[in-house]
Length: 471
Ligand SMILES: *Cc1c(COP(=O)(O)O)cnc(C)c1O
Image 1 (cartoon, rainbow, N blue to C red):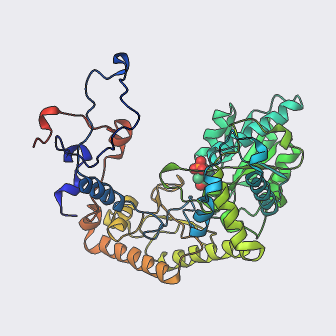
Image 2 (image 1 turned 30 degrees about the vertical axis):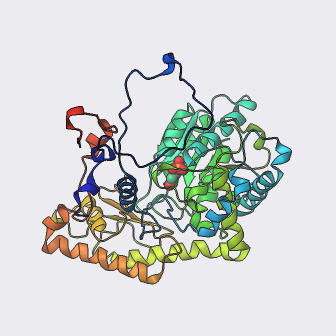
Image 3 (image 1 turned 60 degrees about the horizontal axis):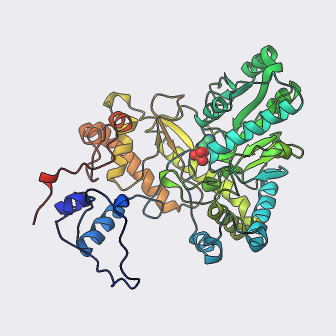
């Protein structure tokens, strides 16, 4: 991108008097906008010819990176395969033009789809009912915790205001508990990355009568399968608490094992993760919450209508196209791909927890710490090679976390190429560390100041009249 015009804002491309459209004659006659409703000053909109506008936005869109442009190893997000057939199903005009306020008897087909999706999710999770109101995973967590809180209240059990969350949990878990007005108790992880059962026993012995719920992710955020769930569930149930399952990592368990069978009472599913909706940039999402029989009467009202219908449509299309047989292959393939990458790189990247992982795993930076090259540098250098960066500095358990999730549908050639590039970066860290530390070199902008961008984001362009290009 050497053309200077491509880097400019549309306002900077503006030339006074340029137009890219022509309006038809007004066939309704003249209508004077009342003076009280007219702007005092003319609004400063960019004035450009059609080609300039088209090129500007097309070039901007080319700066996007997505699953359709390249490999996307971002962990804890299941930014996965998004079959185009799902898009086609969701884009069908009868579904696209649904209105939430239209009479239910004119939307029976859509409602039937929701019911069939609920049935499929119940089959896949071992739970009895789902509500589709939540708009995302975090919204589902809040909905699930409110459901649990309503349940305890209904029994007059008002002392249960504490939620146990493992120290490896996703940040939304403690955040949702706090929003729900609950107190968070952190349970430690063992050196092998799984929940410390002895620490949990101590917490339950001391505070059992105040425990509302325990939140768990399985496989956890390190990509490790928590093998002691049945014992943990028994411990929590015996003290009167309920088990909450964060379903963001349901992907490797699909059709293989079910949260309901493990002893979980309430869970959310991130349909946009596990069930194939592209969700870069924060949306759209859908976080249906499932419960064991009897708990559905405690669902709170967290939003009107049925949530994001098109995300549900894609999920259902995905489930139907896989079918009962093939849905079982998702988990093993995702697991195989993650382990293949992990084993191929662990001689050059630090693997803090060895052994089998599920769909994702975490490195603790480069093995050779003497080069000064950090996880941030590796992630930035990957951009130069045409990859999206993995998740970095999460989970917080290690200083240099670099979390890779390949997902199930990537070919061996794609994985091999990624492995080769990761090895090459490890080599560059030794032979030419400055090249890695100053990366990226091939992107429109280099390293942004994250803190400045978060604290003082500049999201508008200020019109400086005298700087405007004049004809
Ligand atoms: C993504 C994620 C969440 C939050 O889900 P959103 O849909 O982004 O709100 C919660 N827990 C885990 C483990 C996740 O990966």
